[in-house]
Amino acid sequence: MRPNFVQIFNSILLVGSNYFLATSSFEYWLSTPIYTSTNLGNWTLYAHTFTRPSQVKSPTLSYINGMYYLASMTRWTYDPVARAGSRVMWSVSEDLKTWSDPIWSDCWGIDPSLFHNPVSEKVPLNLMAPNNDVDRIWGIYQCEVDLSTGRCKGQYRSLWNGTMTHDSSARPESPEMFWREGFYYLLIAKGKST
Image (cartoon, rainbow, N blue to C red):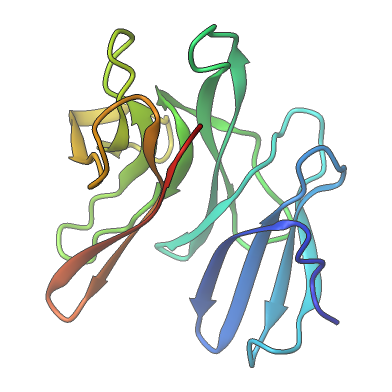
């Protein structure tokens, strides 16, 4: 079976010889299906992440110290410029089937992803957010987080504002950070809103 790719492909993770794929299900409940595969061609529905009303949807999947983390966001407040203040959260699971209630982060923005730094053992949260409430220049930001409380530890800093014109219409998004052979890589999507 192949997942319904009308859903947005958000995150893929390799743990051992198994691939796990988390997709957005938007307004559909049960929310955020996770599929599994050993060959990237044949997929089986493994579980739904959010099955209780206290949970929310929209995924980035991480594997940190033997636990699965699904970082997400939800509309929290209305803002006339950004359209919504998006609150960041994550849920934790040992088996990809039973998930914790949300752990809410200090940060707000969209497209959050957790990165387990294999060098420092710290866990930064990467996300797309505006620089302030005046200029509204969106970029990729990061802060180290406490996974059990959601609190930022240390500096909240800008990583990348993109290569397009620096105004409120150019928005780098969907940050994913990787460590390969001695280098850190930041993979993002980039677009211009009209």
